[in-house]
Amino acid sequence: MSLIRGKSTEKTKASFPELFFDLVFVFALIQLSHTLVEDFSSTTLAESILLILAIWWLWVYTTWITNLLDTDKEAVRLLLFALMFGGILLAIALPEAFKHRGTAFAALYCAMQLVRSVFMLYAYKGVDRPSYLTFVRITVWVIASSVFWIIGGFASLEARVAFWGVALLIEYVSPLARYWVPELGASPRETLDISGEHMAERCALFVILCLGETILTTGRTAAEHMQSNLSVMVFCSAFLTTGFMWWIYFHHGQQKAADKAETTSAPETVAHGLFTYGHLPIVAGIILTAVGEDFSLSHPEEHSSLKTTLAILGGPGLFLIGNIWLKLTAARKPPLSHIAGLAILLGTPVVLPMQQNFTIQMVSTVTLLLVALWEYVALRKAKATTA
Image 1 (cartoon, rainbow, N blue to C red):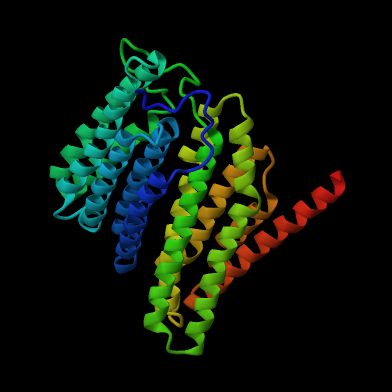
Image 2 (image 1 turned 135 degrees about the horizontal axis):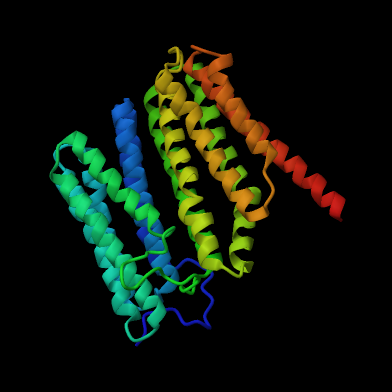
């Protein structure tokens, strides 16, 4: 019995096993946020960037295969449960990945990547030759990156960053190279039968999970530091920041991305642009925003250092960059409101140097409010013009 979703069956909704699988990554994101809050040095930030890239790649490529598979089949569900278990162990090892748990982290990461790829070879064998060969190529690239992951796991800290950086570079370049390997060559374009609408929904749900993680982290920090009226004001600002991020992404951009992915004649290519790469800065921005809100809540009257300013303003900035890419790719029109908001965030440290953390937090919140209002008014005017 085939494990592949039938070509006549359009997969548009996320299944319960997929949603269950996503919960593991909430834990991983919380672990990552806590690591950054505890030590926001340049070294930890560089290490966290590598870990964010790794977590995202695990999640997004699992989403690709569940897009192709029939998640009602027991074998597929067992695969997801196995990946969940590996993901929990990976999240446990994550805070110490650049210390004494580097080997465990690398081994778990590679095992999840390889198990998933080998399962797809099994699922496509004798069913769809071009897709099967695509996953042969993908498996070769996974093996190549795994070599650097494992070597890095045994290496010293400085070398580990380099080896893992190379491993991630191999993985992130592989779709752009269309998984070229000797003898087989590159994978033909549009080989995989991707459901764009399903990919759009899965990424939207992951963004909700990230925003939810931000609220959980903010609530936990607020409960520990809610001793003054200033803390209450900063908490309200942090909560509104999360709400405005939700509005900016879901009011217009997410639906545009879904429409583009659903109607395009090149769903595989568009899915890579919109989802595989396009959502990465959005997710990273939300995680960094949670870190910045922790700083502003725990030390609201402290004068902002370079690192706290980077977290408080950099998170929303990354988020806006991701949404600019998303809306430009989907609508072929640059969102001026987002570009203006990004300019305000970049200019704030120059115009308002050495301000208190709560002031920088307020600037971040007001900037996102202006972006949301500007886009809302512009869209209303555009609809009125075309009506």
